[in-house]
Image (cartoon, rainbow, N blue to C red):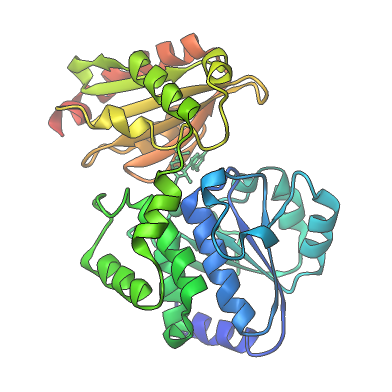
Length: 339
Ligand code: 5GP
Ligand code: MN
């Protein structure tokens, strides 16, 4: 972000504003953590602030301070659209293209509010007046910390802000183990702990809230795990029937894709999850090293994300989607085997 942009934003925020904050559809820990971190920060500046998510998010995020104030666009459409129309400023967090907000896209596109993007995904679209986009960042939460820093307000960080931002840095870095985790990330985390983030309790709230059924679903996913050794690839499928059998709830499949990547010699992992209601197969891709699942998803699965973590979708059946995936692997042979 340029010095001028920071000055402009400081100026903007120097008077009372109506502000809406929006994360991507199917929000994850970083999406909810970053919106809540920014929410608490802006509230301290005495603005009217409302977070609007496109839809619901997993229960393991439903304890973060301020979470109860969040409105969901799919179930409270009228109120949400009114707030978006009236807003002076709209922050869009943890996504890089308006269509990532799902059914909110048209109302966001039409809004006259000043848009500010804070995001770490590859290839951002040019829809915001102010773009704070940095693909080297571990998480949008880390970027919100830098944003607060750029505005000269690190002193303002309290327990609510610290707790919210800690959540997304932790979840997007796989608890500080992915290569996007830097010494700077750890310094920020240290500061957030100093400001009241209770690290062990946060970890417990997010990761130790499994139900018996969700663990059984994990067991089913691991039973379905297949390996394609010649392309150093592992993949998992979950059919709608299997999801139903284990009483699937939003968030239950989060992180399962990473088990494929934990296998020795594997550099590409995928999970294919059938969603009969949306009529799609939801795809998550993960990789190690330089192999870009962002490119793979953009080319074949209508999605994108980061080099080592991306999502996408397919309108084929579960079996046909897997077949398509296997059929494209040879075209990545060199990249997969050079890794
Ligand atoms: P996940 O596999 O956990 O859903 O997503 C992995 C990463 O890719 C996340 O950063 C997520 O925001 C991004 N992502 C997931 N689905 C899509 C998609 O359909 N399009 C784009 N551009 N990014 C996605
Ligand atoms: Mn993120």
